[in-house]
Length: 322
Image (cartoon, rainbow, N blue to C red):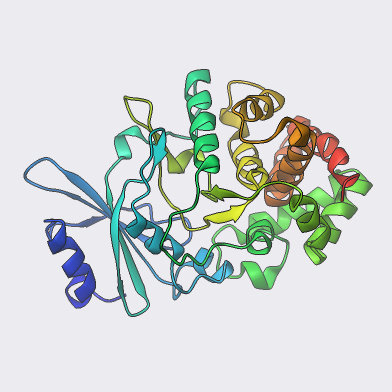
């Protein structure tokens, strides 16, 4: 990657916001997809994060056909609303390299440890608020597609090549197809081959503005209860079942309430019409299983099969509407 001195549009972005080009420290924990993350503390006490990424080395950008960097485009849209928003200040493009400048919200980011019931409800209410908003106007965002999102972790060695947890994903899916009831395993395998039936079922639900990667690592709660979301690299216009399915499957161990209660609380926020609740619930489970079934199977092998059983049992209702 080029040095900051060679990224001329980044230099202009930093100058525009009165942020120094120097004193950036690269964090040891890079972005999950391969992006590079930097932090700067300035003399006035302000702190910034800079995410530098490119399809040349960012696996998620490549896997979701994102050559224009949707996260950078959304950073310039400055997403700010009453209950939820993004800390992004702006972005710059220098050839194939994209730089996203953010306010540093590290102190309010959640960990993967158990959250409180109040925190969980704040997150779900914030997510429902985001899902009820129109997408940013006046910007041409190359939204992540349903196909790219729901097949992101499919058991395909070629698709997963160079992804850092590829071996875990492939091993997990082998276990999943051994452990899951045959009808569920056959359904998931069939949808990985042809997502059409699931897309048609999802088409009966309203499209929403989705963050795309609602995991606790990407969620901060400020002292006034505002939810801030980082890493908008898989943002979508699609049914909320995709965002919620991933959120539940990814963060289940940190939840202070049952997954059934998570579903019920989200729908109580009013984004989904009551007549669509059963379909939304069923497809939320199926989407979560397609994205994270491999992990539930690994957990089952490690001696904790309860959650895999829960997901497979609930997914049975979704197979009836495909």
